[in-house]
Image (cartoon, rainbow, N blue to C red; front, side):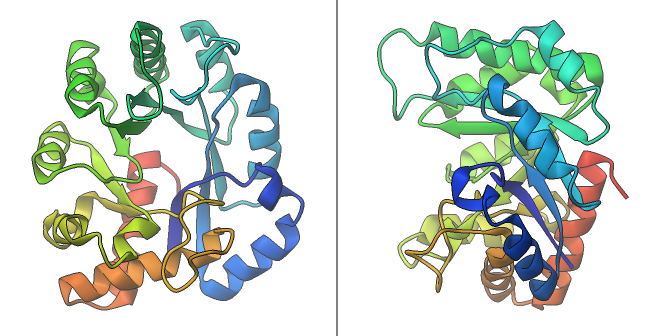
Length: 254
């Protein structure tokens, strides 16, 4: 069994073909998928998708890249998180790669998500890019260790990985770890504790080798597991079993 810990099944590339996406997952042995929210106005779509399968779950949150949209409040996130399918708060975090200027609004948005997560006692799904120092600082300042979470699509350094692990967080690896030029990332995936590791697709983006150039989908997550198995010298079945156990433990699902 495999669990895709981060995908966007409500995005147009996938939502219009959910039946075939589901069939491909079944064939590939992917039994769980976390459908990620990126804007408040699309939360109903995310929840509707998650409700179509017992093994699909959802998050509520606003991605750090989106400007000039409805800002979340703690109360709004808490209310949305009451839905039975919601197992985490996010995707949230900081991204200094795509945006410039005064990004205090982004940091405040991140703080709001952490406060909501602490209130509902659900983990965080964190996006961080070119902002690791501030990401870790805000996690500390807001007491995020109380709820934990995952740094998704991890591409940071070993030092950042160690800092996240010390705070009780999980690391999730996407198709990037299968890319030939991702040598440093492969080394991190080889060394981190297996009980803190998750796998994901970030569908419909970042299709792994040998599917690069195609729209990604959860059925491709075994390719990520296969690369991690190769790096660690263990079986793909063990990677699938352990990462699924981690998924269920972190998000508190059966």
